[in-house]
Image (cartoon, rainbow, N blue to C red; front, side, top):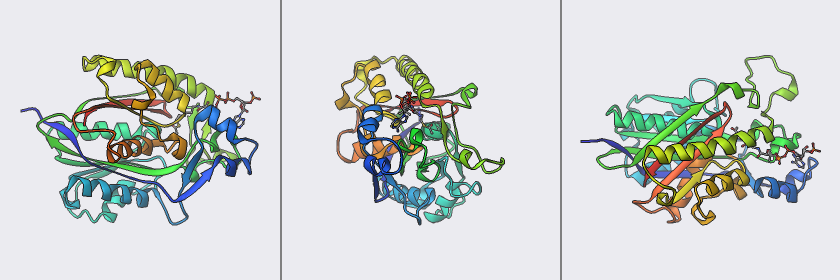
Length: 320
Ligand code: ACO
C-alpha cells in the first residue's frame, strides 16, 4: 500500500505591531504610492522585543497540533525553516521542541533555504513519511526579518515582515502530497544574502543585501519553469489546479506566475498586502489563512511555490 503525507492541521502567527508604508516613509526617502505600485505591500507586522523565531513558531505550532487533534508527544520529527534563528545553535527546532514540551526525544532540526525554506522542509517531511521513517511531522516556517534589515536602506526595508506558519503532516493511505520539487543554484550567491556574524563585518554589511531588480528577473523566469515542471511531473494541466499559494515577495512576481498558470487572481492566495515578505513563513501563513477561512477545501489541488536567496526555489503540489 502506498504511503502518503497528508496535511492534518495548520497554524499561523503574526505579531500585533503594524508598520505601514507611511511609517517607513517617515524614516527613509520613499512613499506609500511607490511601495504599493512596485511591490503590492501596504503594511507588515513587526515582532515585539520579547518575541523570537521560536516564540512565534510555538504559537503557530500549537494551532496546527490542535487542528490535527494530536498531542505534542505524538510528533516524531520537527523541522523548522528559518534564516533568523534565536541562536545559531541549538536549532530553533530544538528550542521549539522544548517550548512544546515534546519529551519523546524525536529529531528536531532547522533547514536554511531562505524564502524557500518552508518548501524545502516540507519536501524533507514528505520523504520521511513516504519512506515510513516518520508518521507525524511538524513543519514550521518562522522569521524575524525586521531584525535583519537595515531600516535606513529603502531598497530592502520596505519588503520584509515577521511571522510564523506551521503544518502538521501525517501518514495517510491517500494523497496528500502529490509531489515536491526543490532546486538550488549557488552561482547567484551575491545577488541576495545575509552576512553572518562569524565573518568580520562593516556595520552596513550586517543586514540583508539585495540587488532587487536582478532577483526579480530570475524569480519570474524560474517560477514559470517550476510550475511547468510540477504540472508535467503530475500529468496535470493548468485548469486542474484549484489554488496557487505562492511565496509572497512581490505582487508582480505572483501575478506573473498566476498568468503562466492562466489562473485568475481570485484563485491565488495573497497575503502580501498586509504581511510583506515573511520569507520562509509566507507560504504556510497563506496556506493556513486560506484553509481557516474556508477558501481551500478538502479534495482540492493546491500548488505552493517559493523562490529566494541561493538562489533556492521549489514547489509542492498537494491534494488537500
Ligand atoms: N522608494 C522609492 N524609490 C526606490 C525605492 C523605494 N523604497 N527602492 C528603490 N528605489 C529606486 C531605486 O533607487 C531606483 O532609482 P534610480 O532609477 O534613480 O536608480 C528605482 O527606484 C528603481 O529601482 P529598482 O531596484 O530597479 O526597482 P524595482 O522595480 O526592481 O523594484 C523591488 C524593487 C521591489 C525590490 C523589486 O526588484 C523586487 O521585488 N525584487 C525581488 C525581491 C525578491 O523576490 N526577493 C526574493 C525573496 S527574498 C529572500 O529570499 C530573503
